[in-house]
Image (tube, rainbow, N blue to C red; front, top):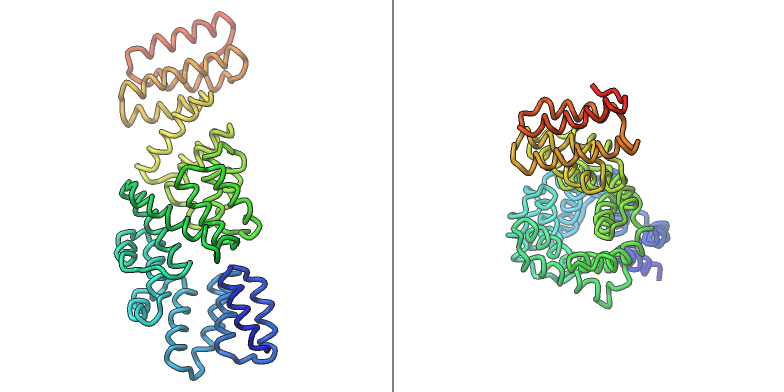
Length: 369
């Protein structure tokens, strides 16, 4: 009967209850410490609960043993997974007929490297049977839909997520609830999506993907404080992606932390990314009344694109900052800096705006540089 522990552990593993799976498997390993199947499952649990580096020694030790061909192929596959895809193009294609997981993980390999077209090509030949396969197809269609602005692909992704979320097998599992959240998010039902995400939040400590997803959902619900906390919980490579920076910038501004938004801009090195961040700062700071940073941002935009819209934004932000100065909510230094930006510009209306503000300041014995 002790062999049942392996099957129970596999079931718990499939349901993402990794701690329970580990406890049940440990009972079996005490009696059969050299079992290849159990040790491979143990490595997979380690990978899910910690990382690939921690799991790798366990499969490398197994590879030294004499195993039947199917087991050896599985270990080759898992070794690549634990190495974060290192060797994927050499190993996965040859295993796709024998191991369905190889196709799935090759799709994930392409998605991680933002090769959406290669992922989509593989996905077209994937007839999903398992929960994982449905989810991979859903994620790929969602990426493709966003990339190509295809409502049809996004709708298909929504339906795939919903199939998993409403499946009797998955409905009360962590993947099932997360899938339902994704389906609701794609259909614009953000409040309902957040209910599902909150129900599984306790199981996703230090999970960048979950933190990013719940932060985006909270943004859509106007929960800016919570969104900021979850964006800042992301510590991995996602922080370097333009989309992450744009959303974090907006969140800082909506929480009236424009200096932090400006810091995101000053750290950006890509010209296109910097321009987009500057535009977010200009528009959103203007909208929430953070006119000092709005004026600086519109000035930067005007230097790149001297359009009437950018001048009007700069003029409006300057006027807004002047009103704040009159009300005692802006400093002389901030007003002086923005006036200098006006003076250095060459717009014909700049001198009138600047001189009007300076005359008022002089009349009220306020020193402006």
